Length: 160
Image (cartoon, rainbow, N blue to C red; front, side, top):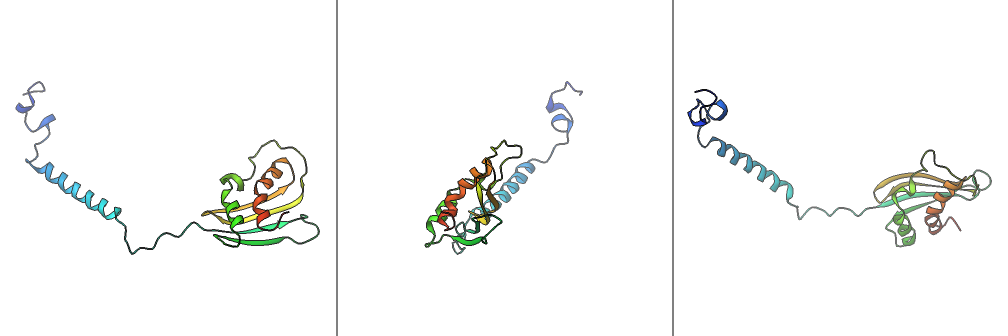
């Protein structure tokens, strides 16, 4: 009864392992399947009394300084969306792409054309994500970023 003997003639079960009692595996598998089914059922239901999730809120402070660090003080407007009074500003803010608040990539080649002294900062939560971005017109890249958010600044009442 060596290696070449048929499986049924070898001691123990297949590959020389001890035989398990008949029906032991199906019983264990049934118990495992039952536990899995109960777990899935517990996770899949919804509670009709549970409150609906709150709509995505936007709440930001927009600071705009028309003449940079000299002259008049910066002005700040707070914007909470949705807002019937500032619906256009909320729409403009939510229409901005995700990367509108990201700084220009390091090493990006930019024209050295000064666009003006205006600066702006948008800080808060937009569509559920935190933002803290400063905008200026110090070079071509920064001016392009500023122009992307100028619509928000304009409808928020700070840029002409």
